Image 1 (tube, rainbow, N blue to C red):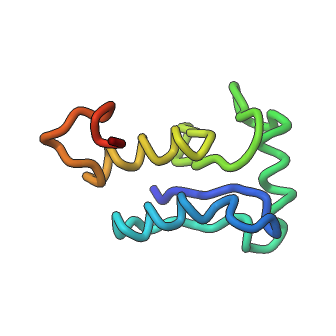
Image 2: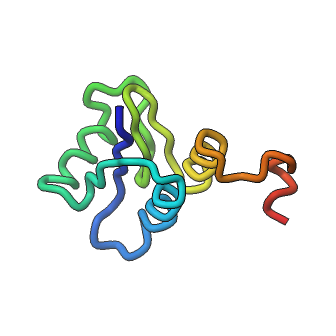
Length: 96
């Protein structure tokens, strides 16, 4: 199953850091914001339609039932799951 990236289209930079991480990891994803009805699809999830615990605000990344929101959390998730962080160094030290 592919990732789906949701963010406010038209607000410069909102999805950029996540897109860069996905590109670096060579992960396939759907950029929902740039597709047809992207904002409407995003607002359905934020509004809680079909989601037990909807994200408070975009950007968020969805894969199946998993939703990871906020850029920092998304980058930590992608880093851990796709080898974007030096495995020799604890995450708390990798930002130094």
